[in-house]
Image 1 (cartoon, one colour):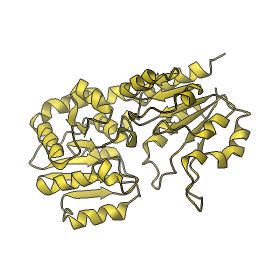
Image 2 (cartoon, rainbow, N blue to C red):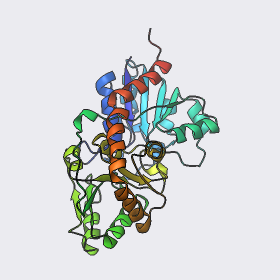
Image 3 (cartoon, helix red, strand yellow):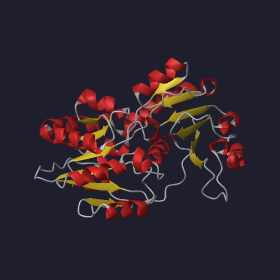
Image 4 (tube, one colour):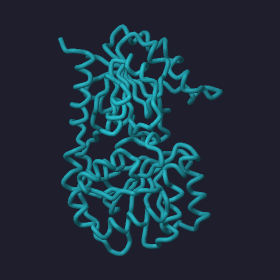
Length: 337
């Protein structure tokens, strides 16, 4: 069994900071296979829309198709990339974020060999719409890289923030602006942002304008996340739209693997897991008051929630569980002889 992997994101500015690429690399290390970037806009002199993604790589893809069994395409939302219809081997299309309520092109997805989603909400929605070849797969990380280092509650509550924005608009839709506004109301709250080389100057400017330098730390380089998690009590991820963030954000999975509770918007599909296992606190609205209310509720119940995080994280999100999950899909598309 040999696959060719495709990703629609641009190459990361800081290696090791892009979650979907981390997952693909785990699969590639186990199953083998080359990786192709379908987004041409890193080198294109003009911006090219998603309808054209991958066509600049078609010659390379055609050459690879003589030796592979299937394609595995990774993208955030259910967008019907025309390039997938031009491929001559079976296509597995992985949707890594949550699903909006807008119905996608169902005929397009039913023409593919398989479609994968990573949360029950999205699976139920896609199947209700009529997608017949949908699989529910699991996100996973190398949990052995993380260790449990409890941090006492000492009057200052420290939170790690992942899922940094890719666009100016995401300062609002990923809750960054609301988080900074919440900080102004809570001098006891400190945030550590994991940044990835995009919009760094814009973030620094916001912090300076709001005089929050003493409450905010930005890490704009590759870092051992386990060492950061040892310095915080919890982690947070926010989104007003499930399609702009992974269904199971890596920063939150990593937090649970280190035994640290998580805070997240109810719109993010991972909220269902948190509600089921009581390993974090949900946030109903991306507003400063709602964020602070959730953090205060987490602090009040911190010992119990922390124990739930310690019990669940490392077990539920192992990279082997993810490999096994995708192997089931691969076997359905490419039966072993």
